[in-house]
Amino acid sequence: MRDVHLVLREEDGTWGGWSPTVEGLFVAAGSAREAVTQAKKTAEWELGELVSILVHHERVIDGLVLRVAGGQGSFEKRCAVAGRLENLIRYDRAQIDDEDLTRNSLGEAVFVCAVAGDRIGWVADQMDQRGDGVMVAALLDYDGTEIAGSGMWIWAGGLLVGPNLPGATVEGQGMSMDSTVAELLRSMEDRGRSGAQAGSEAHYITARSLAVA
Image 1: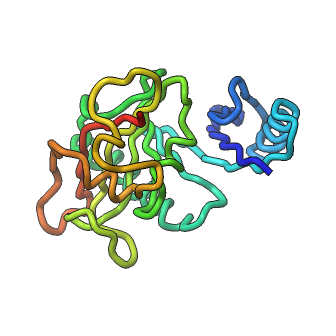
Image 2: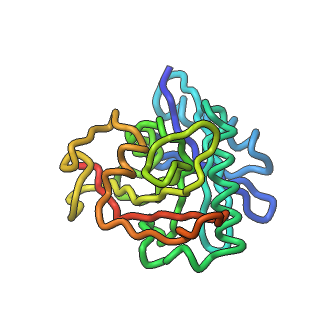
């Protein structure tokens, strides 16, 4: 059985979905369940085999997109990342410099809410291989290590996929698709730090982007 990633977003009562796994797969439905059912049928027809749909839910908050994987391990931790990001966006938006954000082909800044142990390849699999960009976000300690519970700091860095991308690559930094999100975020140089005052609820660290070669 083949895994197929499906990204869902609700707008004005309609659920729209697209898949980076199956080129050209787009669905629209009145509910998330119906959208997943449609996507499964379409993907199985296109691929000629049974598929398992891996759902990623997106929400748009003040022009930024938060994406959370449903049905995955560590779901509560992923929701905690989304919750911290939402609080930051709503109450301390100035910490996020829009010029530093990696964007997709539509100009959107999509934050994939991850945990430290997620693989880089897992993030890349939910991107459009023809050309895409996302921000990977996780809750870590100040030095980039995972701690028990939820880390105090929101670490975020860009990831790009597509042909002939300029700049530094994941492989060039000594990593692979099996490297973890924590390793990815720690590897990024020229890291800007903001919200560093002790006791702040919105510690935020952002970094430049790396490309998947």
